[in-house]
Each structure stands twice: as C-alpha cells, then as structure tokens.
Image (cartoon, each protein chain N blue to C red):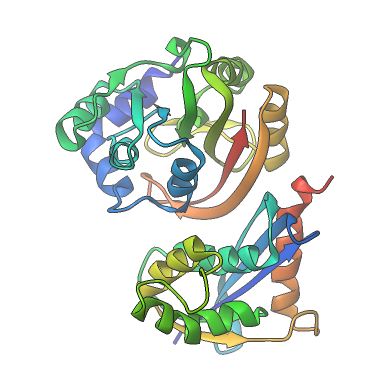
Length: 149
Length: 196
C-alpha cells in the first residue's frame, strides 16, 4: 500500500528579504520509493514564515487527486497554525484577539488546499540531519538563489 | 509566425481544454496577479483560452482585453464566460503604456524561441510603467511538438529569467511545479511574476 509524504521548507535571507520555498513529495511502499516530485520557488521580498506557508500550499496544490498524506514541516508556525490556531480564527470569521492575522492570504490558501485532502501534520527539527528535510531545505535555497543580490 | 497546427489543435479541442483549465476560484498565481494590479485596472490576457481566467479577473473588478489566436477559444470565452475576447496572434499585440498587468499563462510557449525577445519587447512596451507581467511556461530545452500536435518551446529557469531581464522585466516571484496537461502527461512548469 503506497503512502504519500510531503516534506516542506522555507528559507529567507533577511526577514523580510529574498526568500525561497521547497517541497519534496515521496510516494513510498514500505522502504521502496515509488515516485518523487520536487517543487520550489522564491520571491524578491518576503519573510521566512510566508515561504514556509507557500511550501506547504504548493505541496498540497500539486496533488491532482484528493489524497491521504503526511506533511512534514520544520516550521512550528505552520504546524501550530494549521492544526490549532486556525480553528479559532475561522470560528471568529478569520479574526483573532488583539489584532490582525499575519499572512491571512496564505493561511486561507493553505486551508483551502488542505480541505481537498486528508493531511496528517508533523513537525521535524530543521537542520538536524533528516535527509528529506535537508532536501527540502536545498530546494528552498535554490528557489531563493535568483533573488539574492 | 503563429503556428497553425497548434491553433488547429485548440480549435478542435476547445471544450476538452476548457474542462481541464476551468476553476471555481482563482489559483494562487491568478490571485497574486489580481492582487498586484490597481483596483479597476486594465489587464491583457494573452492567449486567454476558454476565458475562465479573464472571467475571474472581471469578477475581481478588472477590465480585461482577452485575446487568443484560436477562434473557437474566442467563441467559448464569449459564450461560456461572457468575456469579450478577440482573435489576435502574438504578432498583433502592440501599443504603448496600455495595461496595468499582462497575463501570459502557458501561451507564449507556443511561439518560436527566436521570436520570444521580440514578443517580450512588445509586451514590455504595452505595459504601463509600474505594471506587472505574469508568464507561465513548461520547463525543458529546445522546441518540439507534443503528442497531440502542439508546438512548444521549452525554457530553463535561467534562460527564461535572462530573456525577461533583457526585455526590461524584473522577476518578483518564481514558482516551479509539475502538472498534467491536455496531452495527459505530467510536465514541469515555471511561473514568473515580474515588475515591468
């Protein structure tokens, strides 16, 4: 039985500044890798959190069919936002106590993207030797490269 | 010179293509394009296809000049999406400081590589100062016909960004991914939003 995993990462040089995002999708049957897909991108002027969000959005949007998958991010912001905070924001009509929701445009996109799928969200410590997370980091840095002075 | 065989494929498969590319709401690229334009701004949809994107631009309050070389696509845009599209090839786009934004989503990849600098220069001229330019193409090398007869020029990321910069555009965001096209094949693509 094939299982689907998406590893996502964002990178930013300066915050705000030039940034990039990367996503590595892997379909595995046990230890056997059946398929992989690499996605990346970047922006001239952005933040690390926006890049982390875009990595997850792109990973979910690239799947044509509704899918069951595990998305592994090294961003606590993304993991906690999508699994905890977002419920409160939506219940209040996309508002939160004490001010505006930062990156609300991307949170709405992420919410729409995940609604098509059944997603298990996991957090992994970044730059800690996880090969797939390292690969996602590499893609994010490549996505940022064209925008670095 | 516009590729007749490509135009014929779109004429013949307009309905099938419309089904493939029609969405209920703007995707992230179209939303970013709409957000980058001033309220009520004027957009060129170059190679509008069935008109779904132009319709969503109109719904967002933009005025749209929707063009396509395929008369069947133009008809579909008018009949299905109520978009006043017009038939025009890339060569027929001219004018100076007309548009606040130009949306060339997987259309210019049907032009010969040798014509690309000329087309980009004309588009840069048609764009107002401060305008934005969206381009989507398939990633790869050289030119080829796909299995259903469409002519494609493929570009690498460096090649496309160089072409854009030489025409006076400054890339603001880049997105690379993979998607199934009308020929049913998964293909790598690149989307670049630039400041004019």
